[in-house]
Image (cartoon, rainbow, N blue to C red):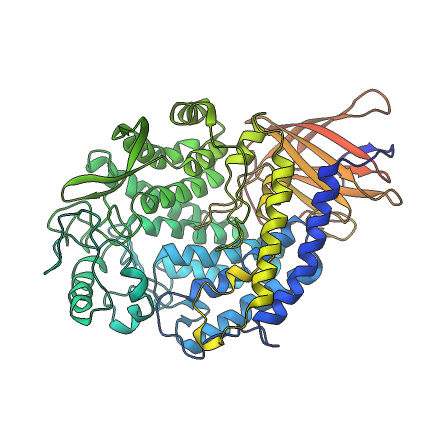
Amino acid sequence: MTCATLAAKTRQQPPAWAVRQRQLIAIMDRAAHPFVKHSTRPDGTLIQRTVWTSMDGTDNGYEAFLSFPLFYLLGGGEHIHRIARKEWDAITYQYANYGTVEREFVTGFDWFHHSESYTYIYYLAMADPENHIDRALRYAAMYTGEDPLAPNWDARHCMIRSPLNGSKGPRFVTTQTDWDYHRPILSEYLAPYEDIEGADSSDPLFKVDWTDDRVFARVLDQINQRMTRGDVPLNLSATSLITNAYLYTGEDKYRQWVLDYLQAWEARCATNDGIMPDNIGPNGIIGELMDGKWWGGYYGWRWPHGARNIVEPALVAGSCALLMTGDTSHLDLARSQLDMLWKNRREENGQLLVPARHGDRGWFDFRPPDPHFYIHLYYLSQSAEDLARLDEIFPGREGFVGLPPDWGAAKAGICPPKAWFAFTKGKNPDYPDQVFDSTYSSICRSLERLESDDSDPETRECYHFQKLNPVLPEALIQMAMGTPAAMYNGGMLQAHLRYFDPQRHRPGLPEHVAALVDRVSADQVSVSLVNTDPVESRAVLLQAGSFGEHCFTRARLETRESDDQSVEINGKHLQVHLGPGAQARLHIGLKRFAFQPSYVLPPFK
């Protein structure tokens, strides 16, 4: 391919961060093998229970290997890609035999869980789009009204017909079998309703015993009466599945579906005094099955997690609309809910808290605001307005420094973005060391759990394999691509930069090449590239945006060899030649959302 090029030639001692980054990539390449050997059979199926009847759990099967395609996009070995593809197919086959998957898609569950598993296929698509397009279009058809076997979409009311949906369409009735596996776990959550017969509801966070058959029968009856028909904000996470089809085809019908659905929820929010209602009845009416209450729906303002399941889907949908249009106003729905919660803040013991839930007695369960959403919002918009939100709510950004020592202990790949954000704002110079120390520690702990696991497969709970997975690339994704990474529940991986190996014609950093992005803004990105190999040269291809949606304008390379090099680009790609042991620090101008986003890989020639 023909594109702008820059070159660095002089050998230099590689910085410690570059050496350690390549070391972690090499460790994860190797650590994948014992994890796969311990966790799967020769055909790739998970070594776990022979019977699985719960609605929940299918997503966890996929999540066990979700990090593999993400790691491959960073530069993981070719075997990582082979494993990622094999495991998707094997787990799909396994859960189809359990009865929870049909036509390669979960038969009927919610988008809190769908979004966790289907992020896997978005990474597979970025790695190898030619092999996954048919699946993507079939999945999208289940939600756009084009698949008669999956009538999830109500075009008249512009809504998804149930919180529980999938390849068999909306699921209006749930059974004891659907819930049995999680009944002990749900007993630890607050009760889904405030009027459960026989329950003491004097405390708004009261619980009921789901393992008591009489109590459970009452809860199940109310769930089926109130919660399983109509739309909920959680369904906004389905926009990423439709965006996935758009990135393959560029067909406007997918973009328009996302915009129409987002607009429908904006209208519902406006009708409800600026608060997103969490339950829309079968006829499109707010509170239709909840005695007119805008709260109390499935994964709504009260149960089970509260505000998180309102804000995050709105942010996922807004980010998808932004990707396809370049219009940051599509983030306004998420902004409005964050602002509304902040407006309802209160102070306790000198600390400002925002409500996490709403019930019959108003707002309750006040907690510190979560910076996660504000960081993602600002990263996506790169606007002074959203930076001001961060500065107001987190003055001084105390607590944004440092990473937990074992962030991969539950769901491989969720790395908090606070330390990364502080680094890109010049406030956390120790961030690279924090990444290496915490990632290495997390890998070691996963391997220790793996080596000591002598559990009976028939007793393995659905999160079992996630805790054993030592392939933990997300902190390195933040570091190398200049992004907080994807929102775990359904987000697309949007980044300032993406890397390709022009010699091997594949995604990811070339062997021996390390990358560190230390500044990102609306119109520029600064990145250091290092060839840690003093013997052979390397070339790395940089792309503007994860999906080629941005445009490089001009690049300047700082060099010790002579005067700085500069090149006009005005395109999606820049190739950098790194001599043996060479380093390049680049400042690259950027015009964001200049091109139609696509999964299409660069035309390697």
